[in-house]
Length: 266
Image (cartoon, rainbow, N blue to C red; front, side):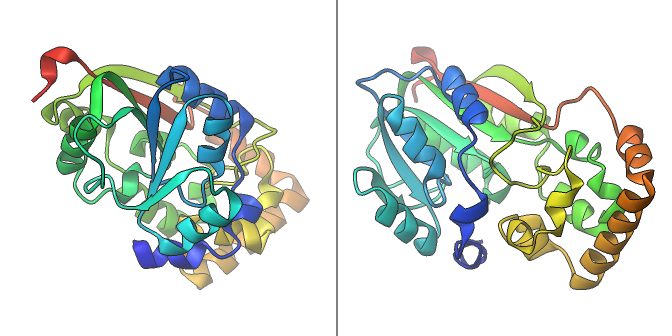
C-alpha cells in the first residue's frame, strides 16, 4: 500500500484538493477545540490537514507514504508530518483530542488493531470521524456499468459498516452514529465517484491517476473499453438512462463517528 501511494503521490495535488463542503462537514463532526491537538490519519499530501489547521486546532498528519509526506512538508512546514499507519501511531498515550480519517479506512490492514491504537492515543471524550463509503453504497455507483471488474475489486476491499462498528466497539470506542454524504456538483476533490454528475471527468488521465481504483485496481483493457462505451453513451444520450437506473437514497459516502468516553478508558 505504501508503494502504491508513493506512485500516486506524483501529481496528486493537482486533482485531489480539499473540498470546502467535506472539510466543513468533517470538522462539524469532529467538534475541535482551538487549544486541542488532532490527528489526520492517512493525510496524504496534507490538503485536508492544512485546511483543518486553518480553521482552528493543531493537527498532526500521519501517512505511510514517504512521497506523500515529502510533498506535505514542502507545502506546509507548520504541521507535524509523521510516517505511520492507523495500526501504528508514533504518539504517546492520550496525546490527542481527536482523529479524522478521510477515504483511508479501506487501506487499514487490521481494523481491530487500528481502533485499539486510536483508543490509545485519544484522550477521553475525543471524537473519531471517518469519511468512507460502504460496499452497499458503492454498488449504487453507475461506474459499475462501465468498469465492473474495477468496481468489484474496489468494493471487495471496503469493510461493511457493521464490521467497522464491531471493530470500533471492540477497540473501546463508542459508536456514535453515521451521516451520509452525496456527491455535490461542485466537488473539488476528484476521488472515485467525483464524476457522478459529470462523466466527462473520467476521460482526464490525470484525474484517473489520482484515484487508487483506476491507478491500482483496474486493468488497462477494461478502462479502454469502458471509456469507449461511456463516450458513445454520452454522445447518444444513453448516459442519462444509465445514471437514472442507478439512482438510490443510500448516499454516496458516509461519515462514521465514534467517541472515546471516560468509561471505556482501558
